[in-house]
Length: 175
Image (cartoon, rainbow, N blue to C red; front, side, top):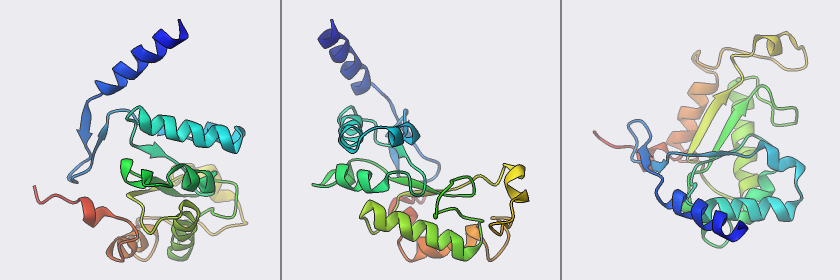
């Protein structure tokens, strides 16, 4: 019975429609996969899960700064990096050294740490995350700023795109 369920699941995944992401040339399966729950799994199980995800055609994994990114690097080795789109975040809600207050410097630090951890020279997408959680901005251990104001997160991400560390230019469409 388990084998049958697996075959049905694989067949369903083959039929997943692709969607174009905004004005980019990026097209991915209409289902992505968040990976926060993998943090509680062993490295071996996490890598196997990521590999299986790609085999099933889920090509849009979602990660966050510092979240087992080294495991993703191992899972994407051997040419798998090109099988999907790699997304990370600059986030004010993570509870590790990669937390970003959305200043230009903390945004750059977060993205460069993710690049290093993933073992890649570019990310396909970077999300500004956590600015909608006002309780975080009451904490004093980190400076928080409006990410969309000039000179903060958005401006720094645009610079990093121009440096080809975020691959928006690789995927932009003229239409």
